[in-house]
Each structure stands twice: as structure tokens, then as C-alpha cells.
Image 1 (cartoon, protein in one colour):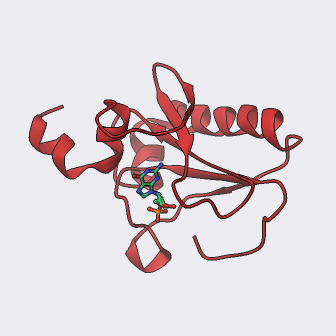
Image 2 (cartoon, rainbow, N blue to C red):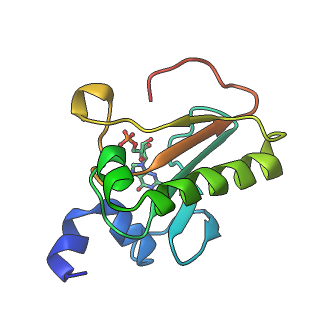
Amino acid sequence: MSDAAREEDLFLRIIAGEIPADVVHSDDLVVAFRDIAPKADTHVLVVPRERYPDVPALAAAAPQTLAHVVAVAKRIADAECGGEFRLVFNTGASAGQTVFHVHAHVLGGKGLAFTDL
Ligand code: 5GP
């Protein structure tokens, strides 16, 4: 990944360790870290290392990575909130997406209300 791409992609900078984050899982395909502004007791972002703008692009180009995102979300929920969780992919600015590097919000535990993300 070029320096210019990393510069404009917050999550690539977190994955590269340039911006600190509370990482809860890391492997060849994804990195998972706690959201800086949690909306529930558990609020973790699962982020593919490879850069796709949103979940339809990820599903089209790398469906096995999308399946892995869901498996990692389940693993986090098993560890933190009894295996029950909400998985959210905001897709597009009008739907609340602010970071255009695909990421799954894993939400669970107390404080999980139906809120805007
Ligand atoms: P989106 O709005 O794109 O669906 O989600 C982006 C998420 O990234 C938001 O929930 C926001 O709180 C989180 N976020 C933004 N900047 C940072 C950061 O620097 N560190 C972490 N850990 N999360 C961030």
C-alpha cells in the first residue's frame, strides 16, 4: 500500500500501527479493535486488512474474507457477550458511513439500544 493511500485511510493507519488502537484480534485477513466512541458495552470494529470501500465491494471481490469477518465477530461475541450480537455495516454516507474502508460494527452486551451509529 502506498504512503498516499495510507495517509487518507484511517483504518489502514490503525492496521499499520501508526495510530494506536485497542486491538482484540489480528490475523492474516482482518484486524479487530474497539471503537473509539462505543455505542454498547461491546463495540468492536472488524476491518479487513485489504482495502474495499464498503461491504458490497468486499462481498463481490473477496467473499471468503466477508465470511471470515462474520466468524471473527462471533468469536468476539462469544468471549464478551454470550455469543449474541448485532453486526452492522453502514454503507454510504447517508446511511452513516464515515470511514470508507469496509468494517463491521460488532455490538453487544448491556447498553445495546437501537441507535444510530
Ligand atoms: P462508520 O461511521 O464508518 O460506520 O464507523 C466508523 C467508526 O469508526 C465510528 O463508530 C467511529 O467511532 C470509529 N472511529 C473513528 N475514528 C476512530 C479512531 O481513531 N479509532 C477507533 N478505534 N475508532 C474510530
